[in-house]
Amino acid sequence: MLLLNNHKILFGSALCLFVFLTLYIAVLPALDNQRINKPLPRQAKILTEQERAGKMVYIENGCVACHTQQVRNVEMDNVFGKRPSIPADFAINKRTDFWRNTANLMGTQRAGPDLTSVGERQPSAEWHLIHLYQPRAAVEASIMPSYEFLFMERDYLQPDDVEVKVPEKFLKNKRKKIVATQKALQLVAYLKSLKQTDYTDKSIVPPFLYKQTKKGNEKQAGASHLPDGAELFTANCASCHQANGEGVPGAFPPLKGSPVVSGGDLELYVTIIMKGYDPRPEFATMPAVGTNANFTAEDVTAIINHERTSWGNNSKKVTLEEIKVIFDKIK
Image (spheres, rainbow, N blue to C red):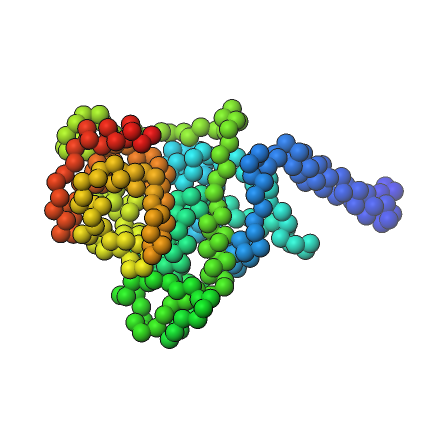
């Protein structure tokens, strides 16, 4: 055969077949995918220079090995985002530079929590800095390694230094000040930028599947039907206020002996839990924990009763009916 006997024709044919398959299997589908998956309408926010630099710190430290940035369409992922991720969520990604394609940060393993909306769940830069320096200072059971190399120790603070208020038991030298390096600040800026875009067209957003009934949401009154307040506190509050209720000086206020916890202004108390709090410059901003976690009146009642009767606090427990009245008022 001429094809087998003439090497020019043989290699030319193989080259043409290779180019055809490349175009048909890789290039054309990719172009079509770009055409049908446009960025979401309100996803036009471009990363700032600080956030872009933080993304590179995220990549170089291998954070993608343990953290995903994709909300699956199963109910257990509802804690990580308001809706399941869709292709349009990733359409805004651009090439890292001329030589490198966009780094894939979707991840495949979830040794740590998903970070799709971590900027909404935890908007406090102080919390992120403490967590990076010593994860066990923020989450007692964390298996995340410490990133102390992103920080430095100083005897005295300089004008532009950002001090990290780490609990004393995690400090190697209690006389030193822990200061965040530029890379640490960049990484935190990137993490705070991670917020899932709300998509108004529900018709193309897949629903969460395998929905589970949340324990403790029964509508009967009485403490016996409330969820476990200690468990809810540990899951949603202890990372900042600490398991002992003492908080972190200069970062997160204590609940032990707190006038808000033990006081009689329940409307303020419930509003703080549901909508967050940012009145005092000496402490970090508290996110809308209750709203983000979809707390019910039963959940809030259980948490308040736990806080009002723990760590030496000895205040009267609240009733579910009281909290429901406030819930209806602040909505």
